[in-house]
Image 1: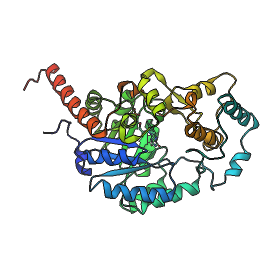
Image 2: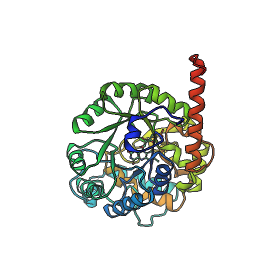
Image 3: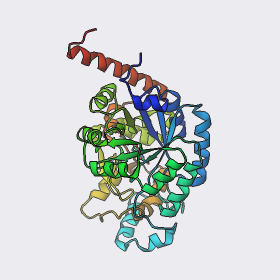
Length: 367
Ligand SMILES: Cc1cc2nc3c(=O)[nH]c(=O)nc-3n(C[C@H](O)[C@H](O)[C@H](O)COP(=O)(O)O)c2cc1C
């Protein structure tokens, strides 16, 4: 018997474990799918060619198990890949602030881009990324910020199922209207781009609104108790991101790994300083500097990406300790050391089973 409550969604998708695992690491994604869950590859910062080869690798290495890809397709991005047009629109005050950080923390100007600035987020790039996804064998396509109807229609025509991440009922309604097949109710607690409503408040609202459309709970899920609670709130699975940062498959820089291990649930903060949209991450000198009274207000996406992208890339390459950081959710406080994906999946199964037994006892079901 499975340690998990019944999930018609996961049975339909061919997964034995109702855990969707989001990661930017292909190794993590493969390991999650091979352990019975559904690995979700975050590919928003990958070029179309990288997406093509990454998805081909996933199709082979997941060996028939389900897997997904996640793109971030926000509205109102510039039409074309034109970095100089973005640069020209960046105010002098913002440039001076970032130059000041570079000097203060002695970050070398090595002339190379970082993850956020290796290309400009644009309609042109989004279209090319989407084509790479549509031409691949990936069965599930997740949309992280926004659910553009044209992208949904194109993906569904190619036989893909659409998963939409939503942080508020109005986003859920838009995703349903656009044709999403599955909703992820992602609460304030979550790592990375996240909205204003906490997971506990959000999930039942989205479940009510979604009707027959299955809902997955995200944000703050770290233990079997959370998984059981997610089912009690009406979800058919959980979606986890922060947890996998603690797995050896992820291969994170040891400086960042140590910061993650030290962080408690109160040590994360939402900041617009990385992408222009609220991004939950562990507190660092970076988030402190940008929240200081003298700091400029971060720009919108994709201007902020380009303003800070090269600097953050150099921070990582040159291991400038105070500014090194990671996206992480409040669930970070539950993890205190490194593990492997199969070990974590096994722990979550045991914990869920224990939590279920404890709850049955409390409810007076002793059979
Ligand atoms: C390091 C990291 C990077 C993330 N990047 C993305 C992303 O590119 N696209 C996306 O849809 N969600 C992204 N997320 C959010 C996850 O999809 C997920 O909703 C979230 O991690 C769930 O909450 P948790 O962090 O408490 O597990 C990211 C999360 C983390 C921790």
